Image (cartoon, rainbow, N blue to C red; front, top):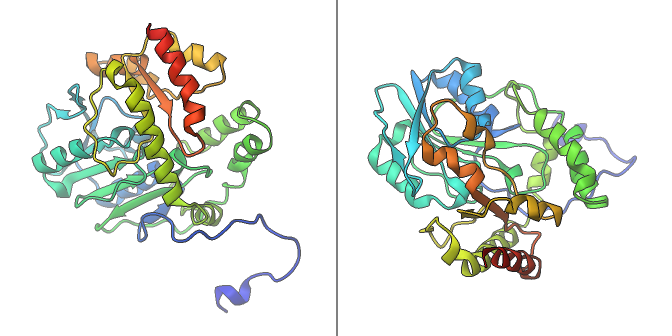
Length: 325
């Protein structure tokens, strides 16, 4: 019996989701999260060690610990380029495409190190094309209203889990609460959903998440993010310590404002403007270089996502400019 013949007919309706077309990155291996995809890859290919930057989310350290893979750390320069790596035989290097704006830095990595041992972490760069390298990782929920999911693109043989993730329904509460009420109503459920993805064995991406990802108008998401970033950059670039040299096709996660005045994030939160922190745990990590240690506290990550318009962003910009005098 094929899948269509076994499908239930009639009865109650499911949530209506438009079929917008194919999801991004056709042919990717689909897991419940990018960290689970990375764990599956580590167990299948078994590197002798993995070099990762000091400035990275703990979610990428977790699978290394679960796989028992030795970790080596490297520092970044002020342009977020890799420094001080001596890649030995059998070792991998992971580079983060920070904020979806570091395609040139990715080029630099692929020119300096053996491509077949480089993993590009595109968790913050959903729209970036996969590169000719060992593997590329993606995390759609960083950009879209989906509960979970991760993509892995590689030419290497990776063992796929037999089981499918069935917990996506429980991770949708915050998505529905924000739609039905407001951001504050769903925050506790959002935190619980994120917590539920920690220390998990790899599973195939849920059917619900795959269906949600197939309903997204990616062209509209891309266009709005690019336009919002351009507006913020036009207004704030002369105050920003980070000099962007991103490609025109880059689709940003956010607008990173390096050198933000102290207390600005808290002042915006009072006005219900919520900015993420990437990544506060780095500040207290033992041995972290000064540049990376200062980044979380000195950088304001302004939203520029597809829900926002110039009218939403203009008052935020004005508050910042007022604060800057």
